[in-house]
Image (cartoon, rainbow, N blue to C red; front, side, top):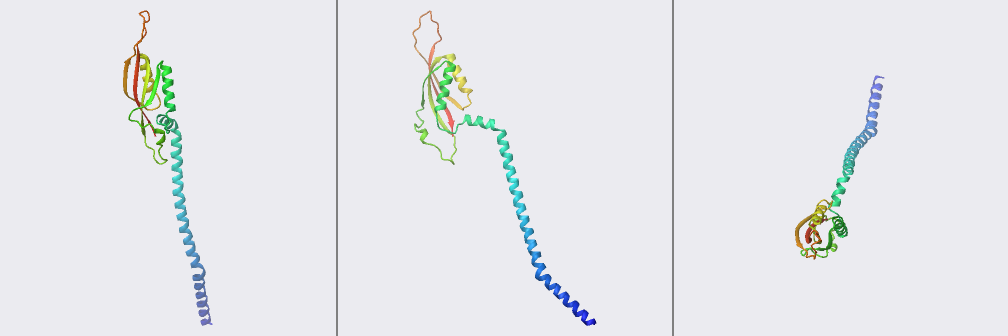
Length: 190
């Protein structure tokens, strides 16, 4: 009987080992593969979570600085339209009591600025040179230039030419002399 116990125990042990190798070991390897896959997915999720968190922080930072961005946008408008600039010169002329007689492109400026629109990828700053002619007293011209200087748009006055206008005045009329002023200005757009 003793040999029967030994044989039976041996057979049970062999069958148990066979069952372990047939059923448990593949499940163990499958479990390890799933754990590895889960760790990779968790790392990917953590990385994406940090990325999106950084994007949301950047967006919040940009939104908190929206006023400064609006100032930059008004200083460097994104369109090549000169209508707002011409309107600005006219309004500034009215407030300064100066008559703006003409606004034209400078000689070295291409006339087809509206036709040279940049592509969507290309955002470079372009210089637009203008010649502004106006008539008014010295104080009015000074006030006009101060208004241009204080405007939100970047406008550089590169040249000022003052020529006195001949006016016929009687000695009873002591008016301030009137000047014809030619300004060469440069503004920027992108």
